[in-house]
Length: 130
Image 1 (spheres, rainbow, N blue to C red):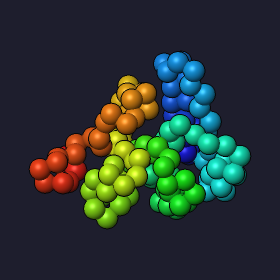
Image 2 (cartoon, rainbow, N blue to C red):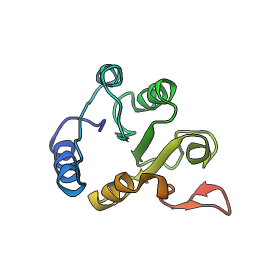
Image 3 (cartoon, rainbow, N blue to C red):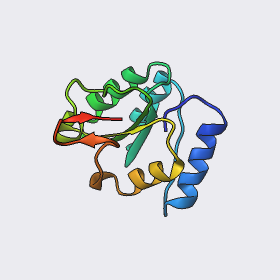
Image 4 (cartoon, rainbow, N blue to C red):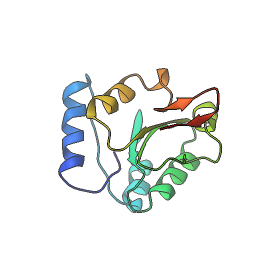
């Protein structure tokens, strides 16, 4: 998980590990930490709060380093991390949740990542609607 250090990050870590069988969550908070983590390890799903400092650079680095990485972006912005909605799901393994989001939604997305699309995605208009 990539987020600002603090109570919320530690709470999400504990709840994910307690809720999902055999889940071990690692937490990082800076772009430098992301570089180090991806040199050392591979991850089933990476969760990033897009509002974290250098959040878009973290996303770009992860997708350049590991284009098949499952990435869950938690964001309070309407625009996607890609220019065209659903490119993330069709060409990469990226999903998105709006912030604030209940931990149960994060657990649902992490546990069944490939079975879900972004929250509020409208296939008819190919846009995220709120």
